[in-house]
Length: 122
Length: 465
Image (cartoon, rainbow over all chains, first blue to last red; front, side, top):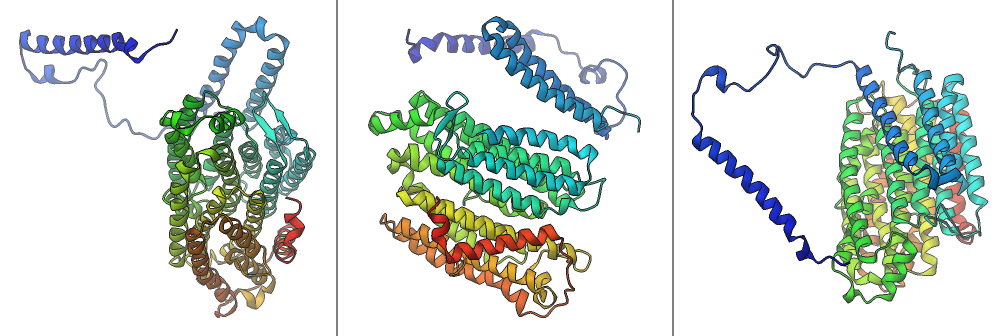
């Protein structure tokens, strides 16, 4: 089946409808709702204790190292899901390729440990 | 092809060798690794084969290009002096590993048969270069160079990817050979117009990497900010690999779309020649001058892109080799002199710090002068024949005006290259004898001899290519 550009028109209709609904509701709430102003009410909503100081404080570089390592090894899991789903079809060939992939990551992990990145107290 | 697997494994083992061995040993082992991978590359000679699901093609041309790349890497490692003594701030094992990884990327870029392999190769090479550029962590200029290179580089990678996508959309194939047959068998009028935009975007993406004007603005700052040893790496390996990829695409598969890219490419080539050479004249810093000189050499190389003679491939190879040998020596002497002068003068990389080098270091002065002569294209050096082959190839295709401009601009080049020679020989200055390590000295003389031998017997190498 070949799609023509005009076949995608419903998507734009949907988009326009979604936008129109948002605009309509925002206009309606502003027009219909009661307006009461006070210092507390006009403040931006925050829960918890009042904030102190600036968010731009220096953070220990160890935090970034752990965060980057987390992303790396997290991605490894992402690759394993599709492999697990197609485990039967990929058969032994896929298994060997996964072994190579895991082996490379494992080498990286050993390197990280030997480099002493996970020893926090030094 | 086995070379890229071997180099990846060597890179990983290099990381671990750093735990147990001193830095001198790691340097020697890395040299050994590169020799092994060169031998593996040569073993594919005369076997035109496809690998990895037909995505990777080894031809004699691609083998020659990968050999030049690995030779350049070999000399860079030999000139690295194992990155000094500072154990806290320099990490030689990691630097060598990243260099080996980036060589893998460069080899992918010269032997791809699939657009995605080109992209992956370019990214492996570039990401490694971003890291190495910023490896001098305490130096603000190095940090600035790294972030500048990263932002500009990733932006233009977007251009390349967009171009690949558009070409894929028009031809429904990522394979170079398929795209080539589709483009030659279909009339250009019946192709969708976004194909031409795609072709130009791919060219732009690659021209950024070879630092052709007007995509050259990052080059001087990045070359100056990066540690000199990695500038040497960048100006030889990145340039050779990107240019090989550009040549293979433009004169290979996009050859039938000649009318689309020929005017932009010649305009860029002429602009690059003018901008590179004229700006180099005004530089006080040798490192910055070499950056602009590398821009202008990109201009000479782009001239050849459209001249699809049989001899053109070998001319480009010859030019890359002669440029690599000369550039490597120029940067190596710069490393020695600027290290010596760093405690004595404010700007150790300026021409003024070379003054009087010949008095107590005649060997270094000779090597530096020969490399400058080769870059300027003076006869009896390799650079002369490189320029000669390129100009004659281009001229024989009736491309007159760009060649005339190129010849004029190489005359301009003589001025700033000779500024270095004059500083070394004729100006008075006090430079004591500089201590040169044995390996460094051997590599220096090997490159200088190579430049002279190639200049006297160009057919020696030209017949192999």
